[in-house]
Image (cartoon, rainbow, N blue to C red):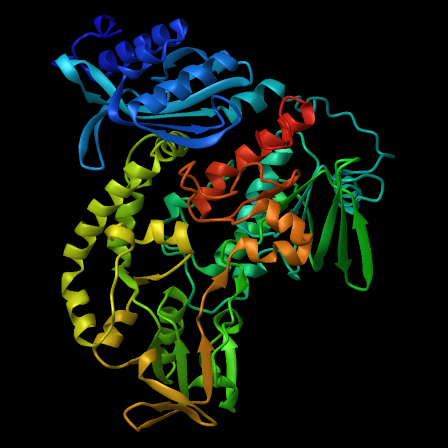
Length: 591
């Protein structure tokens, strides 16, 4: 196949990309893994997001990529790869420290149209080879092709018929039908999944314990804002207005969620507790018990999407001796405002983002604050922290194209890129980090120095975006002690190993949250929990997050969560798979 590739030297990016795509089509036509292998770098990767086969996995190494691609492309008749210069004119870029030619492409499969991205490197004899190659089904094209928008062009109406609001009230009641999909959890991830399921034609209902849509943000501590910039966090179909601030406050997010649900006409039950569910293999439906005020409601959806957040259930660890303390003990999720603690002593256990924000708020109202560090933590100033999201910042293509490019970065390349960014961040933040270490703060920067995004994907926390609390700690205005310095608890606070006593009226446990999988046995039983296994964190085989946005070991049970950008990008794949299962083109079981 190499003779079909023109030398990349002196060629423009569009020619290089077009030549590589032509060679790819030729190799796929032969069905030869050997012909495909020469098109990929020795350390090349293919990330398949349900684009070629119903599989979510990354393959690494040219021979592994070629073997898998040749086998799977034939089964779904993946053909007609072509550069999509309407989305992105092929361009030179630097990714993970390497100069590449970056292009977006489209293609055809028996499952529907696809899209993806490729990043090319100069190869042997001047021929270009793919370093990263990603494929996904084109959700928007699939939905547009199958849509049947209601014909509202005629103004004539039946004045005796129910109007729009009456129709919405009837639809939300589910008095005479069952939802195809029940989404448990009405935060941004659940709402995003519901939006995509509805768009593809599924009947979907969201349930949440909260009294009001958005309360999962609205009821958190006063100073909370998003710690990455607005362009990263847009919702599909309805991006934030340009008037929104760079870092959106929690109440503004809460109100946006409420408005989004209304505008997208999503069926949403508030003040509804999901008590558990059992799956019937014969009917292939769940029996779900919901508690609504004083009434119990039973539903029989075909699918359940658990969207209770990867960090949604407070982790209240067993702390030996804490029962000796006679003051108040609150988990950070229950800490609403620092004002009532003005001029009082508070100890905050933890050094993640919530712990820092709460300490800073308490200090601002005049409280005497002590932070207890339990384990080393990454600290990064909030502006340098945005370097990890630079795909979305500044001028460039529309967010839909940026999502294709971003999701096309496989885990091994992401690790390289993030290590380089973390090194840059540490250099920019060096003065502050030195001051923190002198104050006794223990720092770390993720596995192999890869920074906060992979810490979030592996453990859901362990970092802080500094917006001023680190300076307070470095200056001694917020007291810092290590958990190892505590000898025990007393009625009035802490006894320290140096013989001193630290009095307090409140302990705040900023000890993080439990993951999605901890609820499985409680809500679905031990058998389901065993079938599903761990949720979140990377799987060594697929190099993807475990059980997220894909079929699980339990038919009809799905998981979603993560950052705003993750919900935006990956929710469509849940909708695609469920729609394919209902159409009979995809098994409920993993194969």
